[in-house]
Length: 415
Ligand code: PMP
Image (cartoon, rainbow, N blue to C red; front, side, top):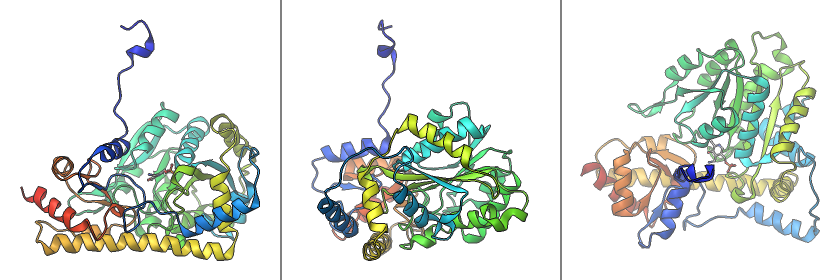
């Protein structure tokens, strides 16, 4: 006993991806490769400010903007643009979607979890296994009384989505239980349901009357086409929450979509995101929205300006928007290219095993299938850093280091 409760608290490890980045920074090897952090890097493995973002920054600089507080729900013009990007311009006008600006995707997830804990009161929250680690932390913190039920997501033998396992688990849900879904570029596996599989997932969710939380962190990043990457969300909206769906019974209890601009606008440190609350048709969002903003007041008070201004400037201007659409394609294509370069190199040097999954997966990451021990060897012997579950952030690769990384993988796989 230390005499103060503070002294009695045990030391916790740093979150893995942050610990890896810190270790990478202090590594003095000239060969070091950072495949740990989920951030985009250009072909020189350097941070990339999107040309559309640079242009918006310059416009804002000339405008000599002020720095007043925003409203609790954020900047209305940004909220409208964020909604249009996610839902398309027609759906985004509907009265049953209400938006709050958030502290990036993390803040949106936290606000969603606390809103659900307080007002939806699920017994369980269904979270994919595996998932972005912070989902577990966020739900543990915001809803400690809610049981986290992990649904199978990945079939490690076949290296594909475990669709059967996922649906079977969701069938155990009860009314108002929450299900957290990744609409595209699933983190960490890089495997998404097909459109037909989404339709079946939607059917189970409606039948069990679950409450849906979509976590959209990679729109545009997965395929290079922001509309294609929003397909699952728009599908859920149109079958459950549009006027047409009034006749459909049963319906899910409601839906929240968490939207991050960290990856698709490269605005990581600016912490810009949004939460969209969607109610079933003919159910008013008015009261629910005031409860949401009450929580936002306690958690954020008023959100940050700069990122909202950048995103709003880009999405309000046709020419900047086109530049941004090109920017997301540039990122998605580079990632596709390094996927194929790594796979080709592994095959060229005849590395034991099948490496085709590297190209089948999409988005920022590859779930390589390397074991914890192999990942440890890559770090200790080759200065190559990636998550212990074998998740590799693809944009840390380039023409210069891909052969080195492939050879190191061959060495640890075959030793
Ligand atoms: N959800 C998922 C699935 C993610 O991968 C991330 C980023 N790693 C986030 C949310 C949150 O991102 P941010 O808070 O930086 O917007």
